[in-house]
Amino acid sequence: MPAREPDCSCGRGPSVAQGKWYGVRCYLHLFYEDCTGASPDRDGSSPHRAWAPLICKVSLSTGTLFLLVGAAALAAGSLVPPKLEGIGEEEFVVLDVQAVRYNHALGTCQLVGMALCVAAGVLGAI
Image (cartoon, rainbow, N blue to C red; front, top):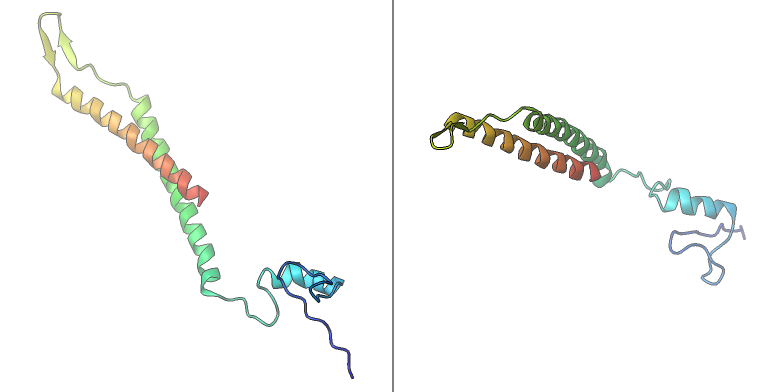
């Protein structure tokens, strides 16, 4: 009767009490083939594995784009000086509506820049 090679699996590790076999071959198959799904009896091409690198690349490139645009918006909102809104003396003050809109746009630019930087951080973490 030919000796049959024992089967090793990726359960909880080989052990004599569970009827598993110790040896170099089972150790290597346990950690480098069976647990990673790269065993020779399977082709290793699942739909999830095909999409994973694409999702990673898309999220990383989108996060980088968001970070660059957010940093530019944050820098523009912070480094551009605001305009004076009120012109005049104590008793007679004229409100410059264009300056108010300009300063509001600078504040909005800062908020959008911070939101884009946060979104880039989230995408980078994914």
